[in-house]
Image (cartoon, rainbow over all chains, first blue to last red):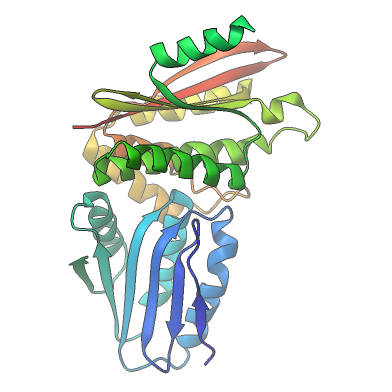
Length: 120
Length: 180
């Protein structure tokens, strides 16, 4: 399967989706002008991955900041992962960032996927 | 040239650290954010406060960018928005102002009044209800901006509508982020 490897910018997150090496990560800042357009290839990739996933998938979110339009798309990403067997989410937040911790807790209440909360 | 000194004095007396007036685009949003971030960094601001201010600024600026597209490109109102950051000893004050038509003014007022009646738990519930059920608008908005600003700031959203004539109102929105 192709690897998605996007460098982060000041308004888009770093994305690494690599089935072969079992690395699935979204990190950095997400405030693109058009969040639906930005996340569509990621949703497409996850949908294709779901056809033949690894036995276990540890998907990491390590976001510093995301805007409200991105939050809707992050929920779409989580909803797509929800349909795949063996997915776990690692939700990282900076140790003094209660808002990011709470955002993760809320997402975990909206989808049926186990979340692990970790600080950095 | 006295207006320059007057403007300078107004900015000082009102503790304004950044005023931007004109066209709003994603590129300009990024520049304004970068300036404000550097400003807060140079003042040694706490990272938790910085994050909240950044958050409110993004939602404010992207609201203006999205809604300025409602106006005809030739209309002066398209680029007639203002964005202001004020800093006092105990707070940051983020203000935006932009023209809206009378119908939008009514709907904005209704939404802001509803948000302002809610406490922390009420806002959280509203946020979750919207994110679960709403689809992105054709402008790419999630309908979550004001709720998020209220949640992150922990303060009521202050607003006013000034009559601009021709059926338009100037919508000013102020969010306060306490530093302590």
